[in-house]
Each structure stands twice: as structure tokens, then as C-alpha cells.
Image (cartoon, rainbow, N blue to C red):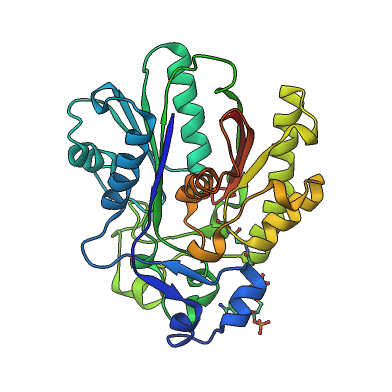
Length: 325
Ligand code: UT7
């Protein structure tokens, strides 16, 4: 019913990173497509970004904020270990007493959240769901050469949507398909701090830089270019769609090369997909609503268009959603 986004005002260029670690603008652009990203400044949090994105989404939806009856907050970077971040957004929006649900499916978080919102609305339990994807990576990255493979990729930002009951068949969620495979959970993870460790954080663990995210980039890349086309095909088969029925593909923004490969693999023309990783980097759970918001602003997605969302990320998790915007 409405979509919004918010990113920090601080722009961090590839050259800014090259001043702090052994990397270069050319390496980052060639391998990932990223030219710059936004990182928070003191005082900005996942909740403040999410609140701004939500206010825009609610305003555009035309829904009275008092009609919002559930908040779903997807993130891999909660503001605090507990409570979940959704309650801070609820407080900032002045929405008292409604349930707040934080979910943890990393880059696929927005698609999982959309599926949950869709099911709740179809069941009649909730009517207007505020779904948020919000991330602050920059306060937890290894800003040194040791962490350069991960650090150059991630950006901060938030996207939000209001989902409500469809009043016609031109504005509907047609399907969502969700998947996960935990067999290689550690190929993209942050080990510390953790309640599975005694104690949760040690000086030794920090000295070994284990509180920073680590990734086997090559493995993740291979899984992504396999699972994302599968998830798109799954949705097309379920809905009886042909490739030419898709008006716009919004893929998770992890790497421009991944997205170009996915579009090529399914045979989708380049003008039927939108990417903005160049400006924002990988904002994990926020990337799809941020990218979709931009596509709507640019007129690349119009009311009634058939839109496919697809994501792959840590867990490993992946999934797709087909909708008429
Ligand atoms: O959203 C979550 C899902 N995440 C993803 O989908 C990410 C998927 N993976 C990727 O996007 C790519 O694997 C990366 C962009 C992260 C890395 O690209 P790659 O082509 O797989 O590079 P690599 O990790 O194999 O590293 C190649 C070389 C290495 O040097 P040597 O060993 O060949 O001498 C790295 O040390 O590039 C080096 N390297 C860098 N050099 C400059 C790694 N990171 C950097 C860097 N700048 N930032």
C-alpha cells in the first residue's frame, strides 16, 4: 500500500575505504559494482533509519497510523542484543500496544517478512502490517585489510512497506517461496558475542577479530547464482507465468555481478531488472525495499505491474515473492 526508505547522509566512497585498508576503487567496482555506500554517524541507529522509512511508507499508503496493527522488523544487525528493535520503532512512531515481531533471516529477511505479513492478513488476524528491513553494518565491520572482503560490501539503510488487504486482483501478493539450508551456516556469520560461548565475548576472541563478520565469498557467490534462479522459477511455475509476464525483477543487492548473472541465467532482458547497489552497497534485509522504492520513484514499477522479488543470504536462506504492485 505504501513504500519508503531512509539512508544515512554520510557517503563513504571506495577511495575513503582505500585510505584505511589495502583495496582500491577499481577492485571494488570490478568485483561488486559498488561505488559508494552510506554509513551511520553517531546518533543514527537501525531504529531511527527504520522510523524515517516507516513514516514515508505510512504516509504514502494513506493508512491512518492507528490502523497499523503489527510491526515486523527484519534485520541481522539489531540495535541491541535484546529487546528486539521493532519496539523502539513502535515507540518512535507512537504506536502503542500493537505486537512487534523481529525476524532474523539476513538478506532474505524482507521476503520472509512479506510472507508472514501476507499470511497474517489472509488469515484475518491483522489488517495493516508495517514491514521493515533495516540494517546498521558499519559499527560492526573490520575496517582493516584483514576484513576488506566483507567490509567493502556492506552499507547501512532501511526500507519499509505497509501491507494490507487487497481490494482488487491488480494489487496482490501472488506467492512467496521461502527456503533455508543450515548445513553451511558458518560460511557467512559473526561468531561473537554469542550466548553459545562462555563467556559471550572474550578479549582473546576480539584479538582474533572473531567479533567481525566473516564470509567465504566464493561459496556464497556460487550458492546465490544457483538458488536465486531456482526461487524465481519456482514462483513462475506456481503462478503459471512466462518470462515476458515479469515487468520488473528486484533482486537482493549483494553483488552486481550476481544479479547480472541471475538475470542472464533466466533470460530476462537487462531493462526488466533494477539495481542500485552502486550507491548503497549491500544493505541486507533493507536492500529489496530500498531498491523497490527507487524503482517506483523512477517509474520503473507502476501500479498493477508484475514484480518479482528474490533474495539469497546468510543462513543460508533464500526465497522469492511475486506480486502485482
Ligand atoms: O548478501 C550476503 C551474501 N553475500 C554475497 O552474496 C557475497 C558473495 N561473494 C562476493 O560477492 C565475492 O566473493 C566478493 C566480492 C566478496 C569477493 O570477490 P572474489 O572474486 O570472490 O574475490 P576473493 O575473495 O576470491 O579474493 C580474490 C583476491 C584475494 O587475493 P589473493 O588471495 O588472490 O592474493 C583477496 O585477498 O582479492 C583479494 N581481496 C581484495 N582485494 C582488494 C579480497 N577483498 C579485497 C578487497 N580489495 N576489498
